[in-house]
Image 1 (cartoon, one colour):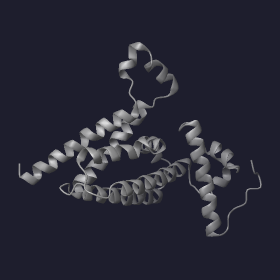
Image 2 (tube, rainbow, N blue to C red; image 1 turned 45 degrees about the vertical axis):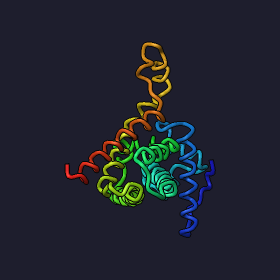
Image 3 (spheres, rainbow, N blue to C red; image 1 turned 120 degrees about the horizontal axis):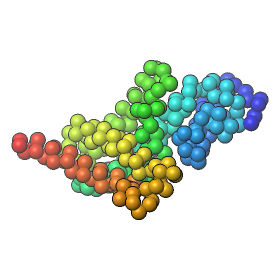
Image 4 (cartoon, helix red, strand yellow; image 1 turned 135 degrees about the vertical axis):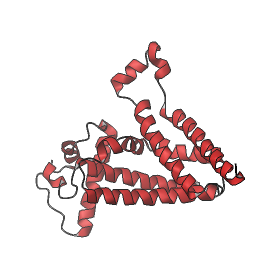
Length: 222
């Protein structure tokens, strides 16, 4: 560990230092899992003293929220590139599911958002986090609306809210700890075991078809 960790002075150096810490946190999270991603482990991975982290982040939770926002922005950018024309509902569902399947770290952090990540952070941090979440959601909803014009923006936002809830519940259920996975692999319990990819694809398709049915009924005046 670098015990001579020096505080960054310029805005550019501060941003570089924040990025270095976030990159270290991502490596620890990907390698060791959520429960093992502590301030101590992040500091060790970054090569700094733990107290140095507090110059750039208020808590472990803020670091993980920043990681989640970065991954979410990446997902939103990919979604905008993939959804550039009108699509049928099943194709839109496939693209949406793929965006999450391809980003397991984002799924993990979404699943811990309400229960863990929104604790131990200030109201100011929460406001900034929610604003950035809204920007991403608005961008994806606009793309959805272009893909399926008879979906209103409210339909699109409702679909996205349900998608976040879906991922939040499915990811921990389908990606359990190793000791739970060993039990679920036993013949007695194998019917309870699911894989995230097929589960989220199926559920997203079913959910989007439901949104589409409601939207079509509204347009037909039923």
